[in-house]
Image 1: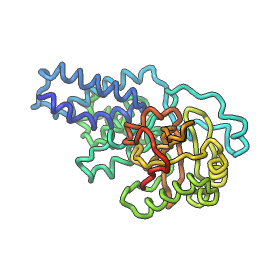
Image 2: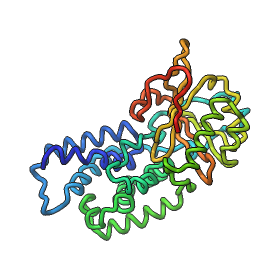
Image 3: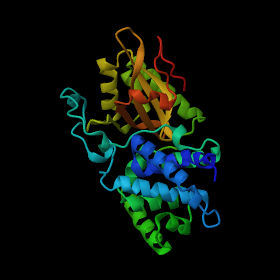
Image 4: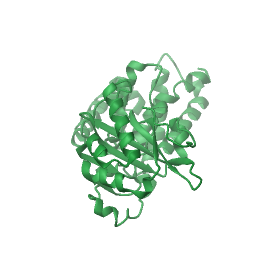
Length: 326
C-alpha cells in the first residue's frame, strides 16, 4: 500500500469524520490521526481480507468514537431554542456567546464532496447539510457511525460490522434504532441545491441585491414566511420573513456590506464582507442559506469565521463594489 493510496482517501474520510463530529477543527485532527495510524500500520493491511477503504474507515471510527466520549451534542440554534423572536429583541442585545463546542460548524463543499464523481455529489449534498449534521448529533456515537456507514456511504452490513468490530445482527439492530431516532429529529425538507438551476441562481441574485441595498421589501419577497435566521455562537434567532427583512434592512452594522457566493455544506452560502476604516471590504462572517419552494427558508450567520474564508475559496478582501457573482 502506497502513501498516495491513503492520501486519496482524505476527502471521503473528511466527509465521514465531519458527519460524526460536526466540528471542522476536530475533523481535521481526526483525519490526520487516522492517516498517521494507517501509515504506521500499513504493513498489517491484508487486501485479501478487506478493502482499503473498509480498513481505513475502521481506524477513523475508533478515532472519532474516542473523541466523542467526552463531547457534548452539537446543534444549530434552531435545535436549542432562543429567547429572540422579534426585531425588538435585537435592541436588548445578543446575550452572551456560548462555547464553540456547542455548535455544528460549517464546512466547504470542496473538503466534503468528491468532485471526481459529479453524479454522486448531488446525492452527497443532502447528507452534509447543516441541519442533517445537527440531526445526526442526536445519535449515540456508534449509532451515528452505523447510520452514516450504511445509509450514507453504503457500506454493506458485513463491512460495517468489520469496521465497528461487531456482528451483523448488532449492526442491523443499531441501524434500526438510529433510523428511528433520526426520523424523530429529521429537519424540514429543503430544495436540493443545484448551482446550474436558473431559478435558484436568480433567487440568490435577488437576495444579494436586496441585502446590499437594504431593500426590506426585496428581502421579504425572497424569504419564506416561516423562515428562521440565527447567528451562532449566540443563542439568538429571528422568525418570519418580515422580522428577518426588517432587522437586516435596518441594521447600521450592515452598511456597505457585500456578499460573495460560495458553497457551504452542500448548500449555497456567502462570505459577508464589511468595510474597515479605510473602506476596504474585509471578511466578516460566513452565511449559509437554504431554499424551499423557491424562497430562502433558513439563514445562519456564523460569527467568528472570518479567518476561514480561504477554505471556502473566498478572497481576503474586496475593493469597492462586491463581487457577488451567482
